[in-house]
Length: 322
Image (cartoon, rainbow, N blue to C red; front, side, top):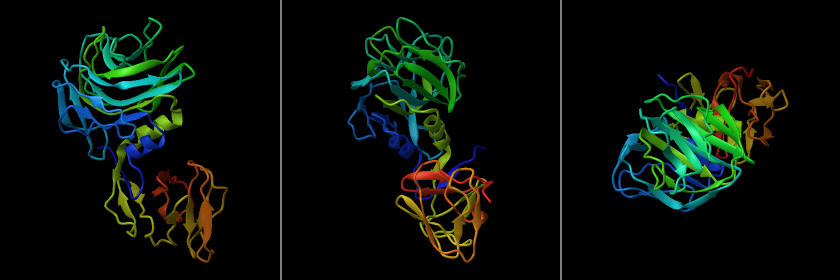
């Protein structure tokens, strides 16, 4: 059984995606109708076809959200064109069905041509441009769920599957995307038992670290603990509420910093992931400014291996911190 990662007061998958600045982000939570809402607030609503979509399919994430199922007869879904530059990113969760059609539409212009497809013959992602196919490396298995990212930096393409790089290409020219699921050109309908959490970044190339972080957040679920609650074990992790644990003192989470309590903890290293931590029962209260997302927060050693949320971020403290 997959483990989940409980989070108190911190972000879930959607928060992490939004923090990385997508131009459009469709969670596909709709239970019906002809519109899929853009969660960025930028207004890139998708106009859905009247048939071919199964709504409220159990989604890709552990937080209980939903997505869409798509049949092989799903018609084109349209949106106001988004100009994807030579630096850009495509992202989605996808569980393909078996199929034989070469070009099934992920993100393309309505006329077809340059764009991102799933090639149902090779079972690979296909970023088509320059009148040529550019494939990811790994063939996808029908019925298996995948996190898909295609990140492009100044024309240099990296495919990612489940958080790991899976092939490269060069020379991406950019394209204006106004179509998902199907098109009016030479492509075909995308058939999938699930499509979920679609995002476009018009001028941002997600880094390998960002892609891995997105994939890792799939297991994040919201905990029922109150902010003053106690620590609780959950699937081999300890979840700590932002002001409540008494184990040599609790770190108080405040905006942009972690306040260490009197009688609690102090940093015995420089604050990087390699730092060591120790409980000092008579230590004075200290304030540790957190300047970088990767910094590890000083916490009581009894609580090592936990996840602490603060300032709309989630900081994982390594279990080996002592």
